[in-house]
Length: 189
Image (tube, rainbow, N blue to C red):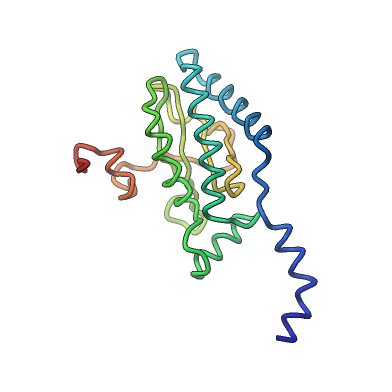
């Protein structure tokens, strides 16, 4: 116990500094406006109201997931906590799989949602969601990444992001998402 108390002055500031700041409501509203704008820039065929709804849902749901997961500031720290059993959830695919149903329920008509991974099947694998205009090439879309900043949604053009995103093959669709993406094979009860 004495050893722990010696390290407390060193560890406490680190842990406090590691808490995620989700921003104020005004800051999240501004991010929502920026994301909606970026989505609308994908194609003139994108419905502005749909882009607004998707942006709001993505930003606020990511923040809500952060409240549930209680992540530390650095994603790799959360991965360590989950992988050692100290936390139940918080890996990148869990963020993606929890965000996707909220976006899917918007029943978008002018945009498509795609599951994506980068460096699949390696220790550096990362997962996200790509949004494209209806029928647009995957490479021209925007990746949504709730994990990267621990619930403060990050997004970027697929072609400009630091991760080499690829569409997730249909056969690798997570079981939890199959009823949404493959209703013909997994009918709801």
